[in-house]
Image (cartoon, rainbow, N blue to C red; front, side, top):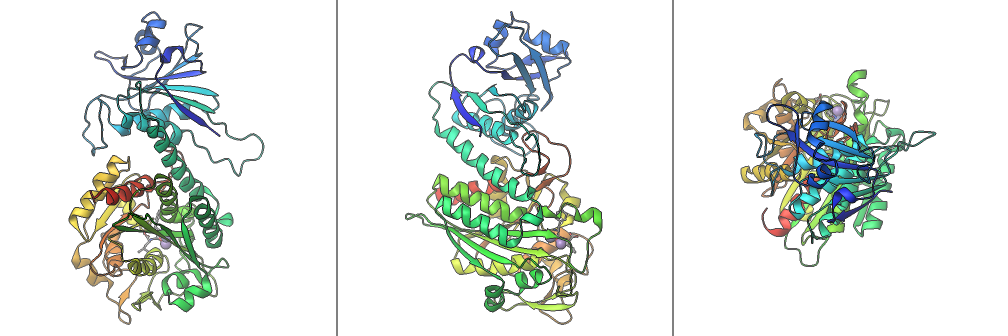
Length: 506
Ligand code: BES
Ligand code: MN
Ligand code: ZN
């Protein structure tokens, strides 16, 4: 277990193993240490910039340069992390009080902590002039200090045990608590995504949700395969019928006695997506344990919301099924009946996410929510359109879509607004049922999936859809505070949206 604390005393004197400082590119090459590192520099006789520059430091974002202190400071090692150029950047606004935006601070702290895995005690001295800055540094550090060791025999991957964050005198400890709450929510989501599907069946996931509900004081209702069939949830039941591991629909509820509004969160929870009878090729299948990332984000977010206690009601749905081929699997051309009665011709069993989501969206309408946000690793087309790190945001309301993009950005999530062109509905016409689950139209697959889901959104409810197919799982190298594997994408944004509805800004 990692402990984290704030310290406003002279950081250069902290008794730790490593001291993290920030550097920016210097004019004419090399680096300049940023505010907060002055005392460290003076203990080193003013030679910090020269020393780091001699080691080749350039100050680019996430760059790590290690410098031994040779006894000049209590800490044995200085770790300089590049912050890039200060000032507003050209990307989406990620919020800032000082000269670095919060995402730059989170990423720098995360990159430093990753580089220090195995070090016992680390102090992080980054430019933080407000409680929000301190929260960003603490959150980045905690998120960077992550490893998934559950399946390693022998020595466990080592984490930093004690983190000290330099903070201005009088910084409210609440900033630290909030960072810890958000970090443990993201950790929960990451752990669920990383867990092999052999150990995370829909039933296992529902049990994990029940444990979280018990610990957090959330209400929980679990529909098993029998209840799903009897209740008319033909999407979840249909997708799940080919697997030996039966499906579940989980409803979690956080209620506040003074709440005026209700937010519904709906997460795609395909614990493994083989494609079903419309089988995926091997290279597209080996990361499909991440196909429950939406449901993971909903569960993580609800745990954090319960801990933070905003004045709002939040219901979360986890639409859980395993998509497998077998003698009992649904066939391309089967017609299923979604909760509420709409019939769907299943022309491709690999477009299964929209089927389980349809059931859960209709059911969420029964909670009379003011806003529904659904989160799903829904389409490969999301990766084609936006790449691996940026989620697509679609909505039936322009102001809501803009709000989700902006608020998500402030939470540190890369979101981008996408349209729901009405003309795409025609491609989903079925020869036999109300709608088909794939389109005759080849282009814009992310949008088509959104248009499909829109059919199942309760009338008159503001709704946003997040396609996190790429962002949920990092197949590449770690960066900033993002590890390889499960990333916890959207978890923090969902918490923020609940707070926005509570405060009246949404
Ligand atoms: N789970 C996949 C989407 C996905 C792809 C998530 C890559 C993460 C990474 C989804 O169920 C799927 O298979 N979608 C199909 C839909 C198609 C058949 C219309 C796709 O995108 O290929
Ligand atoms: Mn699929
Ligand atoms: Zn899927």
